[in-house]
Length: 223
Image 1 (cartoon, rainbow, N blue to C red):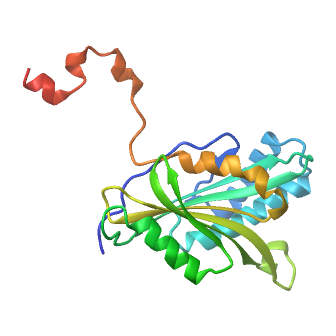
Image 2 (image 1 turned 120 degrees about the vertical axis):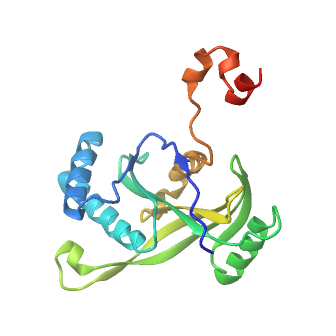
Image 3 (image 1 turned 30 degrees about the vertical axis):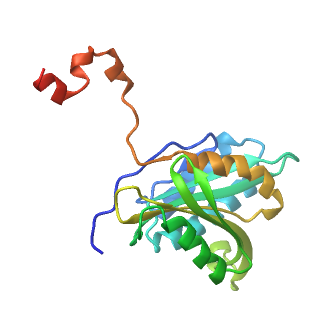
C-alpha cells in the first residue's frame, strides 16, 4: 500500500507540550528541562532532568516506529507528586475492510494477542475506536543515566486505533505513563488528548465576518 498518509489536526489539552521531532536530541532535552522548570516550579531540578531523560528515551524508540507527533505532559497528582505522561500519534497504512468493521475486528485480534490487556470498542467523537490498555516492560539503556547496566521498567500504555474515514490508514494514539499508581488521575487528560484529534482543519472563524455570498466560491460563481 503506497498511498500518502492523510493530514491530521491536533488540539492539545492544557499541560501537554508538543516536542520538535526534528530537533537535535541534546537541544531538545535542554529545552524540555527549561520548559518543565518554568511550567512546574514545584519540581526539583533532578525531577525535571529525570522527566526529560525519560521522555527523550521514549521518543527515540518511537521515532524508529514512525511517530508523527510526540508530546509530554507533566502534572501534579492529588498528593503533590509530579507525574509524567507521553502522548504519541502514528499514521499507518492498513486495509480497513467493510465500512464500520475495523474496530470490532481489531479489538478481537488484540484481545487474542494480549490476553492480559483490557480491550474494547469505544464510541468517540472521531467514530468507533478499538482501545487496549496494558502494562508493558520498557527497557531503559544504562547510557541514559550514565551507568554501565541497563534496566527494565513497567509502563502502562493505552492505545486507541482509529480508522480514517476516507483513507486506507489507521491513526494510532498512544498514551504512556510509568507512574501506574496514578492511572485514575490520568483518565480525563487522556480523553481530552484523544478528543483533540481531528480529520478536518480548524474552522476559520474569520469567514463568519464575510457576507454569505462569499462563503462558498461555487455558490458565488454560479449565483
